[in-house]
Length: 287
Image (cartoon, rainbow, N blue to C red; front, side):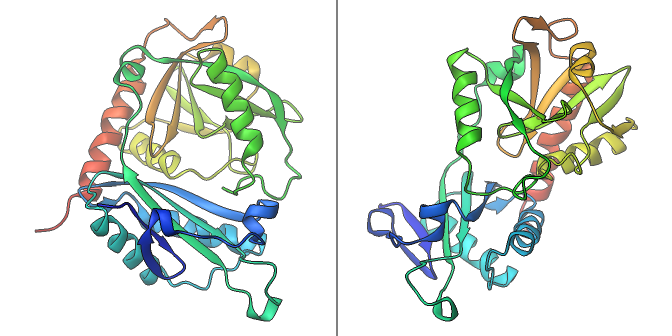
């Protein structure tokens, strides 16, 4: 069976999918995307993903004429067409082909779904290494805090990490505040308190980030959103990263520095278990 994608109102074979050579996303990176996951054929926190997409579209003047119901139906159709229950999905939205007059221009909507492939199991058992990103996040950049298709700086930093056998690179702002990973939000644990950079840093309002904050509240853990610096990172008892694909990923080393005991910490383990349960509960279809 040929893999299907949803492109501009139609389900088509991936080999037949075509985007205009004048598409604003292709030429200028002027677009947005959402990376999602499904369990039991249900997308985890889909409404939150669509809300974030809508907020970013308004902030960055990306056309989003589609109702949520339309997008939900398109995603369901795509999962069914590809016979996928456990999937990684990506929704990409751009302002469309610039060759068209502005009043006639239609956005490009592309949704893809492939089999879900988790991070290696050993990452969660023994933890991962991260590096410090040599680049800086500029708070005055209007795209900061949004998931845009102008993603190459993140990919460059992630490639640097992988060359050093690390899973992620930690970004700091131009004034040296901790921000996020290339593809993740970050949490530090110090004296049983969770610390994470505030959204105003700015950082991406991650769906997994929100889930972890809610789990922490359920587990009576204090969460502090505050400006964090390299000293906070180096003094942390535990560190973990979050996104909906990696879930809760423990960090045990930052370049040559060992985090805490060098082993996955108890709070990280509790929150990871809670995250897995949250996915299961939210994605269990009602019979």
